[in-house]
Image 1 (tube, rainbow, N blue to C red):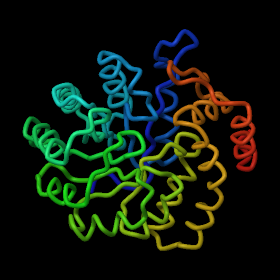
Image 2: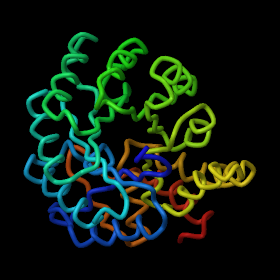
Image 3: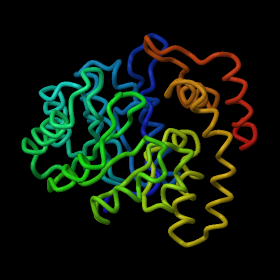
Length: 293
């Protein structure tokens, strides 16, 4: 199982003129790896992929893979609500030597379960040897992946796992029952990381790990060593930050938090904007509690 543990969904830093800040991105990748992250995800929600052009998306994916240099695995976000567009991005990620791809449930056009099955099956058939992770996030895509659809999709050989951002802690048990132990399950909600592990999950694709990659990795490492009390202590320690980073739509709070740590500018592309003053206060409190500022 190549993807497990704490897996930061990497931000895409921008310059103050809204261009991709590759220098900051390079430093951030190095920080995440040196702090013990178990993998990386490129161009997901946290990476502001909806505001990247296709050319930018591909450049960022290539850059992260090359900078990582196989030290830890990279999962490339390639999802779209267009099957043709998704295939183009997946083929690029595979050629760029990504270790897997993450495909969000198609948003806005609200396909039926039959449409979703045919969408993911068409992509899997184009890239038969490339591991695919499904991304179930009904809060952003409207459509939830049903238990029956997940069971059916898990029988396709290169659909190997799911990022579950439903916050439903019965979900990992249900998926394990329907899809088997080998189907890899990663939480998509930082606050559920430890509980997700306890219910049969394998790790977390994390927003918070951009800020505290070492602490996030230690939760998983402690759990695997059966140091449950330590894992629970760390999980509780991170709760205020987890909470603050989701007071507004991600990645707006995490961009602000990282700007306070001087790791990137607090720059987002429209329609995303900087967080409210009241949210800044809550993020600052959480960072101070962890002695980060």
